[in-house]
Image 1 (cartoon, one colour):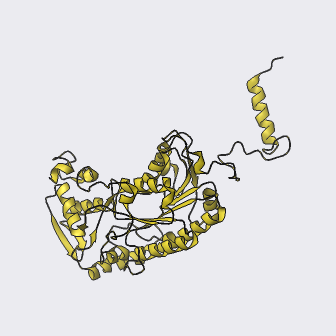
Image 2 (tube, rainbow, N blue to C red):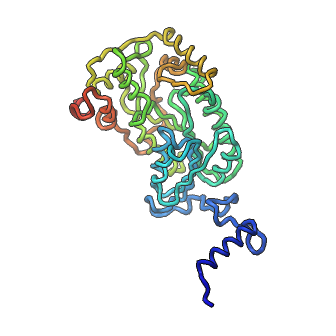
Image 3 (cartoon, one colour):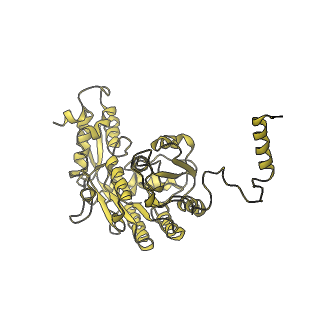
Amino acid sequence: RGGNPAAAAVEAVRQHLAAGGRDAAGRADCSNKVFTRDASTLPVTYKHRGTGGRSSISGITSTVFGSTGFLGRYVVNHIAKTGSRMILPTRCNENARQHLKVMGDLGQIVQMDYTIRDRDRVKYAVERSNVVVNVVGREWETRNFSFEDVHVTFPTMLAEICKEVGTVERLIHVSALGASASNPSAYYQTKAAGDAAVRAIFPAATIVKPAKLVGTEDVFLNRFAEHTNKFPYAPVIDDGGSRLQPVFVDDVGLGIQALVLDETTAGKDYELCGEKVYSMEELVKLTQKIIRASNTGVFYVPAPLARLPARLHEYLLHRIPFPLPTPTGLTHAYIDAQQVDYLKGKNTLGFKELGIVPAKLQGVVIDYLRAHRFGGYDVGSTAGQELK
């Protein structure tokens, strides 16, 4: 007489599935999907802003491409903690992206599979957002992806889609400081070509040009420390005189968050750099001091000589049917890049205009290098004390 409510609920689900997922009127029922194909009902507008904070609503639904990369994870963390919905297309397995789930409030992080060559999947991710951030990039080419694929073809397609769908109000495109058609490195040449394409297709795009990134997961200072531990001398190209302004990766993530929240930054370029200028040689010696290395020598490798193993490596890269390790410094793009300086322009926008003071390189920012210390992590004092 009263019946079993649980059994009735199960029977209702069975009937729903037997009807092909349609309601009584024969219409498709999409209530069990993460999001529907029609984005018109989503609150993709800045007018829905709440009071701020992780559990508030920022009014932002942001798609971040490259979220599992070095910079991408910091970008996701800073945007998500403002109460934003995040759509994170990735091409990796669950183990490689699970750490991103906890960066936003419950249910605010949506992950999906895609490749940069699948236009339909890219569009599927973009059409639900009012903010799109592109952090996709590679410092060396692989058998599957060239610089042209990653830095030009994909940003061009993404800008076209952002313009086409009509819901995207902001496009943040991450390039690199030094991107120029005149740069001797193919890495920076293709970055410049991608920037020009994005600007032509989506004029309101904000282009971010960070300096060389340093942080716990970097392949920059960590590599200098590894080379010091493995070899009698740490190699540098030519005289190690290329000058740059390294920047803490978390500061760049914070800067991109500020760009997303400030609509007046649309259509502008920002160069995000550290305040101090170093040469490559100085950074190698700084790293050696932090790790308390007993061998503090530097081996100056002429660029023509360094290109010989690089040529062999790149030849094998496209012919061996399995992944080939690519050590930092063993590519033409890296070697060629050492011929010029990477400094912020005098009149360009940067951290100052965003109200951010970048952290100094010395001290806690590079204390992660203690993991490479001769004698163990706990030998000696912190990096800040070492450099006083």
